[in-house]
Length: 239
Image (cartoon, rainbow, N blue to C red):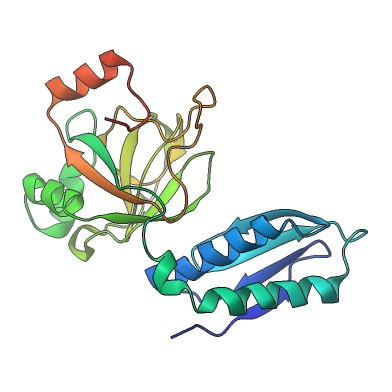
């Protein structure tokens, strides 16, 4: 069922297309489709199109854009994509398999998550790695992909006190979300492991490892394999 859509102003140079409030794959598939369709049309005066979990923000130049015409165009794209949701639910690319070394110095919060879930650390690793996650959006810092949904048993809330710095490649959990820190940055997620693959590298041919609509699987590896991957310099997620 298609969610009711609300188009509202966000200041004098942006419109927000609200499709809902839930973290839902079907809803997000329509968001991704609407955003992609709007970008492809390259509407005169539109500066940027930003997709989120359940909304699309259209930034425009108010001096070059007729607001009524823009709202009409957005409405048309919403209507056209509503019938293609089932198609756009399919991953936009082949699933990315991301090796992760869980626990120890790489995942200092793994035991805390296990205590929260009332299970062993091995169970946490299994529960985290058995899911194929959807990338819902990119945000926070360049390349940070918000993925969901984590098994509810291990969906531990953020830390009360964020860390001053989290190393690039670190894998974390925050409620039903999981993700990989693309660069060294402050962060409040529960850290359970680390990958040698960095979601963002401006020097790569393809700087961003993920895009909204992708599917990601985490593959547990031991420390020896992790160090081998780090030493090989492979950071793009391709094997």
